Length: 456
Ligand code: ATP
Ligand code: MG
Figure 1 (tube, protein in one colour):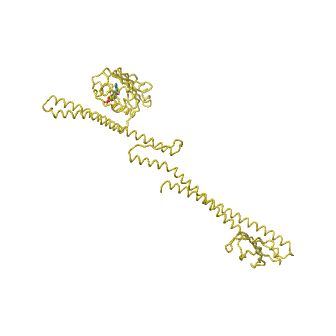
Figure 2: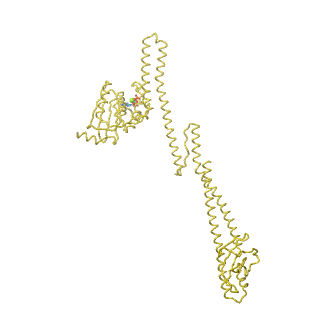
Figure 3: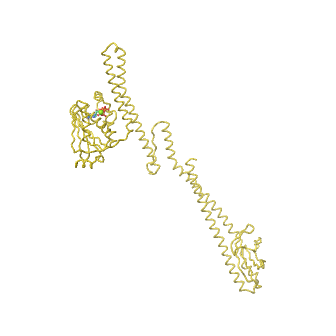
């Protein structure tokens, strides 16, 4: 069954049960009150009759009985053997009222008609002890109760109309946004577009929250999807250039390379250079694609020594001047040494590529540990600074191609910094140089070890 119908059915049924129980309780309380009022009345008649009877011994007993006989009722005097000594009854009572009755007073059904009755002992005119029975037909009360039953049943039925309507409205209110959500999801599935749900501004209920959450999720998916799309298109675009070069050199080889050794050499060198470039790029792309695979393994690293090793490796590999200055006492940070080195390589590689003067590396401890890499090279124009962390972004495409860049280094660096909980800051002045600061978060300094080392 649909949620909508279920809510409707259950709310209606619940209301029906409540109403029926309520009316049944009301009906039975009222009817028992009505009956007991009648019985109480008979009790007082009986009392009055007996006192009159004792006081007036000369009057004909049956006259006294007749005087106290209720409308539509009867009065009987019964001896101890159960024989009727005297009976007076109104002409509309045709039933034979039984002599034996269980209780002293109450109501009973006789021939389908309800009677109230009461019994009491009485000293009869001949001096014997007899029983006085007064009974009264409850025809009128029963008629009233029947009317009450009809009125109550009609009231329940009438009350059910708004209940049924409000149940349907309630079910609609609850299920409409869910249905809309499902509909939107279906549309998204069919069209492959990212659609949003219309959300009522004024309300602030769970349904609005659900709609907002769904829209946020869609926005995130859409953003990721377009990022992915952009990445794929950028990557294919970047791969197209080396492939075009390789293709054209291959054709050149095909046409004249086999005869002309110089052309053959040139072509092969160019093809090799381009395949190397492609290989490097694909390696970087793979790094980016796999970047979520390994979580960093944080360990304690003495920053000064670590920097010395790293810079020594660069001094070995390149014919350039890398100058390291460790401006603090030995200090230890928490980081993943492999990933941190990868990050430094990216930054040092940029400093090397985009400058020709010396490169200074400063490791220091101010409020928090930091490493700065400073070059005196081309610098980055102010308007390009916000984009340098974007994938495939290069300040000057011609310049970058000369230096063999893809524009992927800094985007990878930003990701590594995020993993290692580091902050990257770039300050740059065009034609003067660039300083990149790698700043450790204060939780990742380990000051107590620092002081221990100072002591030793
Ligand atoms: P890749 O690092 O993928 O080989 P890349 O060096 O061009 O290529 P990024 O490292 O992401 O890419 O750098 C993006 C751009 O920012 C570079 O192309 C360059 O123009 C500029 N840039 C980065 N670092 C420096 C720097 N130290 N000095 C001058 N320009 C820089
Ligand atoms: Mg780079």
